[in-house]
Length: 517
Image 1 (cartoon, rainbow, N blue to C red):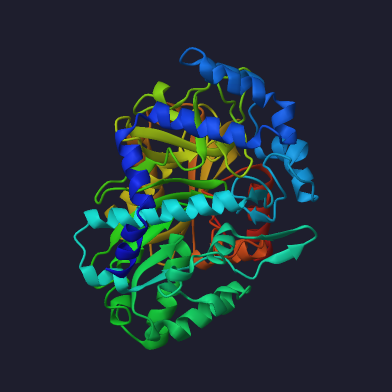
Image 2 (cartoon, helix red, strand yellow; image 1 turned 120 degrees about the vertical axis):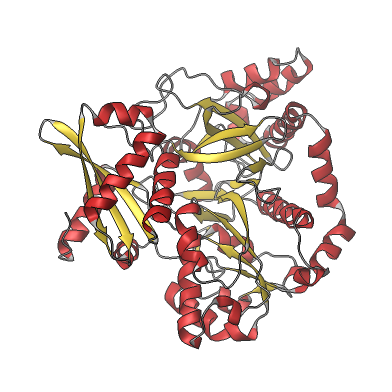
């Protein structure tokens, strides 16, 4: 019980977990916001937005502090907060949105936009991520696991820890920044180890891990599903074995995040000799937001007392336009005002200097009592050409159902909106190495989407006249990502491509002489 024993001796993660368990969400969040405001009241952002006055409102009636907070600070997306504030910290200015100088910037995967984004990372944020990670490890005590597992290695497939020095700061993947600062006691368990973790070339890193794989006794793997699946396939091919359990017989847990795992599950499990426990995390470049706290649940527990204050914007046509952009004068809610089974776009204020920041994710509460959420999509990664309101959750579920029905492994997929004469069409690009009839695949996707989404069903009888499906080798998707400089670590293929990215994709297929339907 080496890992658990160390954590239990430290005690702090256990105390924080109990604090969240026995304190009201509203009280926890009020305290978090107060702490953030106190810490930042002398920053440039704090002076510009009257943090001192907001803090005085905490003495008033129940919700006065929140009314003061949201009336004093506008809602920011990345472009707005970077142009007004974060670029100053990137240029080396101190005390911009967080006290002191920002030493690290994480390059986000840029799934929704055209390029990578620079997200500030502070010492306090790294500490919070570490503490939440350890809290999640403590939840493994709820699983039926042998004590010996907690002395096995943990393979974390992340970005390079050899960060790029750029003027006043270092830049790299969040996974690379945090892995470079893991506590000394954890280094014994951490794989691939410091030397390989510094490797910048993604393919070289995978090759080095493959070489070392038989020397390690891995019990837990951590990473984005697509890249871990690719790594495991390489290991199996290299050593001519049937499954990864022939190399790592004690592998029992897969901690994943970044994308829905369900579309990958069927193909992933072909690489195993026995089932794994799957644990989902919600770790974004802006902070560690939630983690799966119980086995056999698909929901995650929102972390309410570790450096993040949350707000929720109902994800409706009243608040968002057809491109997923926020309208003016929207209603925002705090944790004690949300309802179960309603979709909300997430705003966060953090201990890295994000303030009322729209992270771009859409979540739904499955349990208010236990603060359990699922991610249902992205504010911009949905399709609504003519009112069909097709969510990322709908797409993932339809693909999962089709995989089970047709007994195929769909590695990647993406959706584009197109014209069909004077009407509209959806064009699905499906990445699979299995043989499948495109017409049958199209019909089954269409069938399941109509069952999942009433708006889609209505529009399929009117303005959404056509559904097109092009089946491609899965390697085509990874080649495009490589061409975009998005290989490895936290990068994932966008499930919806619009405007510039849609054009880049279709141009790529033309340049590669790849025929599509």
